[in-house]
Amino acid sequence: MPLNKGLITFFFCIVWLTTFAQGGPPKPKHNFQVETRIHGAIFLQHHFEMTRFDAHFPAFEVSIQRATFGKKKWEALYRYPMIGLSYWYASLGGFDALGKAHAIYPFINFPLNPNMKNSINFRLGAGLAYLTNKFHPTDNYQNFAIGSHLNAAVSLYFDYRFQASKRLQFFVAAGLTHFSNGSMKTPNYGLNILSISAGAAYTLRKPNPYLDLKLLPELYKFEFDGKKWLSVEAQFAMGFKDMTQETGKSHTIFNAAINVMKPLSMRSKIGIGFDLTKDNSDKAILLRRGIPVENESKLLKPGANLAYEMLLDRTSFLFNMGMHLAGAERSEGDFYQKLAIKQLFTENLFGTIALTVHFGKADYIGFGLGYRFDFKYY
Image (cartoon, rainbow, N blue to C red; front, side, top):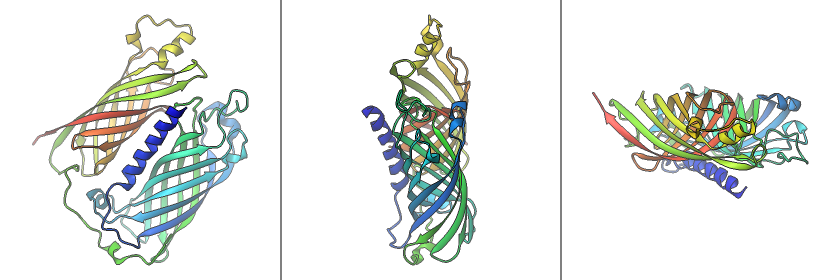
């Protein structure tokens, strides 16, 4: 259990650093807002066993956030988003088996249109959640959703904001909040919570006039320079999957991947990817079913996928949607999805934290290192 907590804490720290350590402008004093919102929420069930927890319930959220000014090129390219930190709370329908949820996560709120008076935005957040009740084989056997108190929290929301005055905004929003530990402790069906919300944001002091300058800085070496490039990225990752309920122990997972990426703009890349996964839990699952494993090479899972990367200076978000091409154990399905946070340590060396899922069910969290080879062509 200490290992699981350490890995999830490491995940949270990386997300925090990549959100708040993007470098800021010369520190204006009056660009902070406090935001409160109330949610009307329901569970989005993706397993039959979870239908016992169908309910409507409220959730509450308070955030502190600040404006960006374009100190980094990505801030200007994304129309000067807000970055902040949220605390989220819900009683999860009042079910004793689920308990209560507390989450804290940094986020970025991206404007999708240039209208400052009436804006449409997309908010992406990721951090940590603490759920007061978890699965126990005798005391809480009905909770198939969560196997650990500590979990990753992911928040995806669209909102509409109306600027009532220079210091006050009102907004309505709709989106998804997800809790999961990436199968570091099973069972781990996870919780998917759909909600609509409404709230207000208030600037603590009169906005600094500097907010209207919106700097457009020089180009940085980690950003796309408009020339024609192809990048080949090779990476290796390792993850852990707890299956003490099924096999009596935890298993390691190894993944090697190559992505070939082409820049579309200063904000994004697209490409194709190929990977090879060795999941040491597959053999144990097959043996439990009475299926002998004579050749362990048949357990390897080669895969092919489409990739999209969203660039924020040295930090980026990588999305893969792919298909396993082989593998003796594929009970979770042939199709998989990945959401990864990438951080460039040098111009070419990067680290990743990636969550692999099969249509909403978390498979594992992988921690890896990679290297990027850039090829210029005309």
